Every structure is written in structure tokens, then in C-alpha cells.
Length: 256
Ligand code: ADP
Image (cartoon, rainbow, N blue to C red):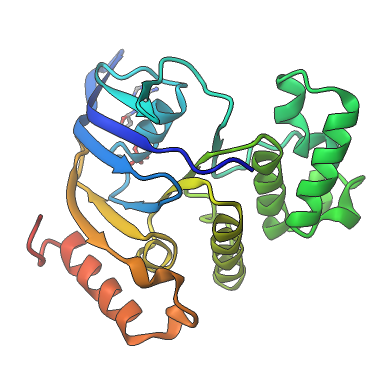
């Protein structure tokens, strides 16, 4: 797994032209994610968070402004950037191993490289025994692990996640948050996680940024370096950070 790459959005604006007229999703969205850093993005529904991720992954072009990885502008999808969506993007007619190897298949990796990397990634996320199962036979948490395995096979140095845990129940969600944090700490990629959950953001982000209602731009940033501490979720500081962010989201905090 390579070192994490730096990712930056510079003054990104996005206007969608539709039958109902134009919708401005983002306006002056600027954010720097350092190599290996974990940033959580919080904001109301429809504020442009998914748009910001799609632009960073190269799937959508900004109307103005730019996105760069390690200083190089992004104009099309980049091999080492992985985007995990809420529905995980699994193909139901393919096995766990085939789903995990999809990214490599698209990159025309040889069958032997694919077998080796898939086996390694499935072992990393604890799915080695399910290689021949189908997605319909997996629990929600296991599907999340499979989406993660797919990202891990592809030398990912930037991992973008769009509300990856929102379909899971509360208990499983905490377990998966720990899995995401452990994997990030072990693998060293940079990550951006978009979420609606204040607790999830404070658990997973070394920095938590808050996006304004549409058109989205960052209106608040909270440094949260203690998130790697043991028992972080039960600490007083964790609850204090959650309170601070709730106040900001409900318009009671001072905006940066
Ligand atoms: P979020 O992820 O914060 O919920 P999105 O980025 O999905 O926000 O959407 C921001 C705004 O842009 C919304 O008003 C949405 O309806 C609009 N939008 C998103 N994608 C498209 C699209 N492909 N065409 C037209 N409008 C879109």
C-alpha cells in the first residue's frame, strides 16, 4: 500500500443545469487534506457533499476551480483514488472474490496478481472464508468490508467515502467505524468521509469540517487530533467535540 496522497479542492464551484433550471451545488469549496490525513465532512442534506467527492474522484467536472492530488490537477478518474458509495456498488451476480477484484479487472491486472491481491485484501477485512459467497448472502457489515477490500486491492492512496455506514444499524455502525479507523491507521492512505453523524465525524476525522447549506462551502473546521487515542469514544473530550459541532450545525456556534 503506497503512502497517502495529498488532496486539495481549490475554490471549487459546481452548477448543474437541469430541466428545472440551474442548481448551484458548490460555491468556493476549498479544502486541503494532507498525505495520510483523515478528514470528516459534515453538512445538511443537499449541501453538495457528494458533488465535492465526485469532483475529487474525477467523475464530475467542476464548473470552475480545481482539484489536485499531490499537486497534480484531476481531470479524469485516477487509479489510486477509491470512492465508496452508500450502496457499496457491489454486483449481485458476482462472488465476493470477483467483486473484490473488480477494480483490478478494470485495470487489466493479470489473473495471478488478481488472485493474490484479492486473497490478501479479503484476509485484511476478515472475509477470507466468504470468497465464494454472493453479496446477497452477506450482512450489511460484511458488504461494507467487501467494498473496503475492493479499495485495498488497488493501491489506494486516497479513499473517499460517501455516507458509507448510513444503511447500517447503530450497533453494527460502531463496529464498522472501528474497522474503518483501524484500516486507515494500518494502511496509511488519506481519507475523506462524508457523514450525517456528528459522532461518526468526531470518531473518524483528525479534522472535522462543516459545510454550509447549498451552495456548499466550508464554514467551520475543528481540529481533532486526539481521535487516535485509545478509548476515544468514551472520553470527555469526545463528547465535548460532539457538543461543539452540534452547536455549529444548529447555528449556535461561532463560525470560523
Ligand atoms: P449532498 O451529498 O450534500 O446531499 P449533493 O452533492 O448530492 O448533496 O447535491 C447537491 C445539490 O445538487 C442538490 O440540490 C442536488 O439536487 C443537486 N444535484 C446533485 N447531482 C445532480 C445532477 N446530476 N444533476 C442536477 N442536480 C444535481
